[in-house]
Length: 433
Image (cartoon, rainbow, N blue to C red; front, top):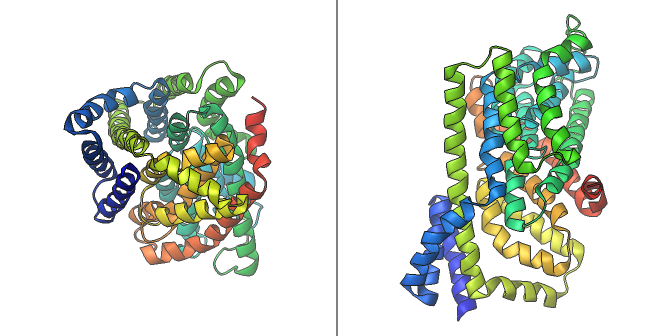
C-alpha cells in the first residue's frame, strides 16, 4: 500500500503543478498529506516543523545567497558592462562577430552571476539593439541572446549546481569543474551556429566585420578588469583548494563589494537593489528546496524510489536507453516548469536509480543542468525568451524569438549527445581534483 501511496502522491503533485500551484506549495502539500496518510498527523507536523531548519542549516547552501549577492552587486554596479565591448574588440574580424561577441559576453557574465535569467536580461539590453542596427534579423538577434543566456547556469558559480550538489551529496566543486567544460562547449557550438548562419543566410546574420577598431585588445581588457579580477580571486582560490565552494561565495561577495567601492560604482541604491534581489531570490529557492526535502522523505517512507530502482534494474535497460528516457523526461518538464522546480521534483526519484546503476553523479549533475537550461528556451514556458521579450519588446515578438532560438536548440542537442557519448570529456577537469 505504501508504494501505491507514493505513486498517488506523484500523480497529485503533477496535477497541482498543471493547475499552476507554486512548486514549493505543491511539494509541501503533497508531502504533508502523504505522511499523514502513512503515519498520522503528528509525524507529518513533526516533519513540517523540522525540515525547514534541517535543510536551510546545511552549510554548503550558504554559498547560494553569497554567490547571488556577488552577481547582483556586479550587475547593478555595472562591473560587467564592458564585457560586450571587449568581446567585440577581440572578435571584430570574425564573420557574425556581433552575435558571437554576445555569446562570449554571456559566458563572461555567467562567471560572476550564476543565473541564466540575469545573463539574458543584461546582455539583451546591451546587444540586441546594436545587432538589429547592424542588419541582423531581430528574430535571430533575440534568439542568440536568449540561448546565450542559458550559459549563465552552466559556467560556475551556478546556483543550480550548488543545489544539485547538496541534494546528491556530492562535491559542488567537482560539479563546477564539469560545468566549465559543458559551458564552453555550448558557447563554442553556438558560435559555430552563428558562423554557419552568416555563411548560409547573410540576410539574417551579416558576415561583415564590425567597426570596433577604436578599441584595442589592451583597452578591451581594461574595460573588463573588474570581472577578471573577481574571477581570479574566486576561481583561483576555489580550484586551487584555498577555500571551499561556500567560502568562495563569501569571498566573491566581499570582492564584488570591494571592487565596486574602489571603482566608485557602489552607491546605497546599488547595494540596496543587490541585497533585496539576493534576499528574494534566496527565499524562493530555499522554500522550493524545503518542499523537495519533504517530498524526498515522503517517497522514502513509501518505498516508491526503491521500487522504481528495482524496476529499472529488472528491465535491464542499456545505458543509452536509460539516457534517452532521462533526456526526454527533462525536455518535457522543461517545457512547462522552471529549472529549480523540475530539478527538485525529479532528484528524489532519479538519484537512487543512478546510484544503483553506478553512473557518476558528478557527470549526471552537469548533464541535468544542461537539460534544464534547454528548457529555458523551449516553448511554451521558455523563461529566457520572455525575459528577452521584456527587455527588447520593440524588436521581436515571443513567436519570433522562439523561431530565432531553433538553430541554437539544434546545437544543444549536439552538446547533450556529446556529453552522453563522451562522459569522460565532462569528467576530465573534475578528475584533476
